[in-house]
Amino acid sequence: MRLDIVLRVAAKLILPLMLVFALYVQFHGDYGPGGGFQAGAIAAGAVILYGLVYGLSAAQRLVPVAAVETMVPLGVLVFAAVGVAGLLLGDNYLDYDKLAHDAVHGQEWGVFLVEAGVFITVFSTMLAIFYAFAGRGIKE
Amino acid sequence: MREHAPVLMVVVPLFGAVLAALVRRPGPAFAVALACGFAVAALAIDLAVAVSAGGPISYRLGGWAPDVGIEYRVDALNVPILLLLGVTAAVATVYARRSVASELPVGRVAWFYALYLLCLTGLIGIALTNDAFNAFVFLEISSLATYAMIALGRDRRALVAAYQYLIIGTIGATFYVIGVGFLFLATGTLNLSLIAERLGEAEAARAVVTGLAFVLVGIAMKVALFPLHLWLPNAYAYAPSFATVFLGATATKVAVYLLFRYVFSVFGAAFVFEALPTGALLIALSLAAAFGASTVAIFQSDVKRLLAYSSVGQIGYATLGLALGNAAGLTGGLVHLLNHAMMKGAAFMAVGAVVFRLGTCRLEAFAGLGRAMPATMAALTVAGLGLIGVPGTAGFVSKWYLIKGALEAGMPWLALLIVASSILALLYVGRLVELIWLRPRPADAAPVAEAPLELLLPTLALAAATIWFGLDTRFTAGLAQAATVGLFGGAR
Image (cartoon, rainbow over all chains, first blue to last red; front, top):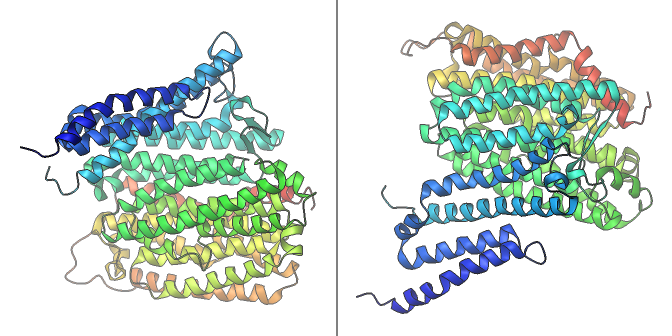
């Protein structure tokens, strides 16, 4: 009989809210404070909380180590690739004007995709750090 | 596509780093690194040709104007550095495969290549960007990758060395960014050319002097200028051999370039050398580096550490050229960056080949090695002669310009001290050469074969370059002189 029932129930209540809030921060970044870095940190916080309450192995079932190690470079790839898309469309690197039918929408799309890349890398990097520290001393 | 060459030089190794991290297997990761190395070299040559034909190139990231966005700028001053980075990346990566495979566990090799390419991205970025804050970002990219590369060394002391460098490097970066903050306060812009324009109006402001002090001290930590060099010997000694080769040939050179950029094209020589006592201070520190570090190098028992201390001393010559503040001195400082990269690259490669064959680079392991590994040891000897500054090697050319600069500046005693400091180099190189060629191999030593071709060819290429550019100075000195002419606004 574990005595941390309050913790477990509270965590279960908070986790979905954290994830939704992360998405809110992610998509609200265009209009106000927020963006990929903050959203990635909040989402990673949710997984880390899950790991702290339910154990490292539970967290690693949710987000496997291999997925984390792939996502770290993947986010950078998304960011850099959006820049190259601008290059291929005839603009300078990181110029998003031609990504959509007009410049304003192009910039909106460009920033949206770049922020998605930031989210992926920040989320996975924070998890990678957490896994590395939490996994210390555990025999593989 | 050619007009995008400046940004491609950064984007190609960045993509390479991401790909190397995604494939996660040593073979493909190395292939990616090799392709990036040659692509970067080709882009650097293309940029050099374009600049010499059509003058400075400006590239606006995202199409934003320089006062709001980030501008990359290629001119006569950073062309030599870009060539240095590109060619080193190409030559060194050939060397990488066998050396890295022998020193790192298989699971970490791909990560190592990712780090190497990130470091290359950062260094190229520092050389290309014309934006003070962007330079800070690239400085951090290259530094963070460097810390991790050093920590991957086989020796457990590599962890401590990486940690020391992390602390000192972070303090240096913080100083730099504080300095940039002061400059932004005084001028309202982060673009280096615009800062230079607007400083004219704000010359006397205390914020500018404070900014100068913070920027110079911050960069000096990255340069490993005496007495801020303490991180360097351990970092170079315990890092994987390939990391030492690459960092020894490039990292501090790029930091010296940034110093040149700030002193001559941002603040202006008149402000730095005439209104402030920076010149005298830099001369004193450079001499202290040349004498102090070279003296310490004589007493090292680990060849990598010996060469690392020698690097601190040699960096002193580059900053000395800067401190002289005249055209000949500046040419000497710049050309020494290129020459030292060749010599130190060859020397560290030769030592890396010894580590590959013997698993150690203790001084006593080199006894009689001249007979077992004649080609590798010949390359090491040539590089050593270059470090002394023997006529006929590249090291002589840089010292000749430095002495000329010292005489032009009316400091004949300084010319004498430059020659005197070469005697110290003669001592540490002589000690090594005597051991390699004149001592017999210990009777109980295991037989050693010559280094494999993959390690030998890049080593010999750099050693040959040391001799070639010692005899034919048109190319290297030409590049440096073009840069000098640009900095002095066409004077001379």
